Image (cartoon, rainbow over all chains, first blue to last red; front, side, top):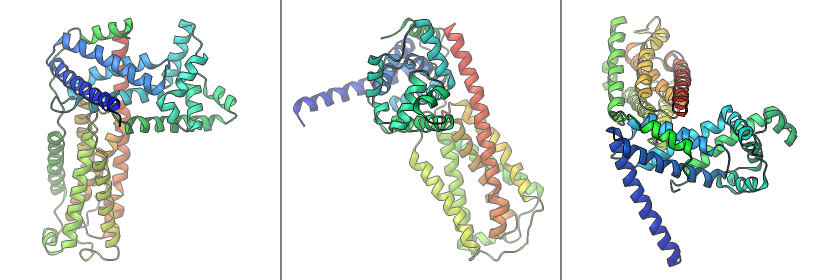
Length: 195
Length: 227
């Protein structure tokens, strides 16, 4: 291992340790009702969630929704954090869960459509497509699942449109969505909690 | 980059922040639930009928009988722990889940082996007329109360939590029937252990209902904070 890589790893570990301590401390204060610490914590966590999802899914439209849903879930679950334990496992368990829930729900599709309609954005833009294709999660998925998830969850196709595009039945599309999300959950669960 | 919408959300969430009393312990509520449920099962069971004659003595005289009872108790306790683990985000230990399932398989295996090599002589002594119905009666309230306790925390996977609690709640009467109903491995498998599946389904349904309710509450929160 080169000294440069080694020192970079050392730096990341130190940073992660510092983050851990700071977040845990802020959450302990938030549990006592400290508004400013809580606002700072949520702001920092929001950026961390966005970076985490960006690295794993690319620039998909639902990232901001995932961030906000995760922040709301953290708010609802803040009484379950144990200050004597590590913050990251608790935090990332919530983020993963909200992300998978949002991916699974039909609401994500509707949100994409609504967002696209208001922003006049075409999600089929090649830059976004490349970015998404190269993202960690989509790259790790089997092609059959990746295609179906990209079409339904990123490009905003309906089940029947996806079925027609891929030349498969709607039932197969539904099964692949289900299995693809299950595989996504597994990928997110097995990785380390570094962002 | 923090978007204006996110800043609004953070301001709303942190405004008038109420102190919360942390509910992050697993062992204590799990232990409390397990003990209180056992007291309930024993009290109601004794109220509805006596113990089988010679059942307590069998625990001492037959090591196989004591072993299958202890394995069941251990497995039930593990499933209780696993269910309460689900209540706190990030607290799930997959090895405990595997251990719980392995112990449950060993427990069922004891009775399957007992079909050929019973721990004690099978007999109709102590047969309870409605042991299946009693099993539902004994496990229903602990299931409801247990799920309520779990729901007060933040179960990320309500379905799993409900199913695990269902297994644990279903095992309580199945185990107590070991000494309060007739002993015959075939009867135990069909009348005491098989009803656990219905309790597990009930637990899963409970999980789905609570999850829907939680989703509505979360959605209301989202709408309120975004408006």
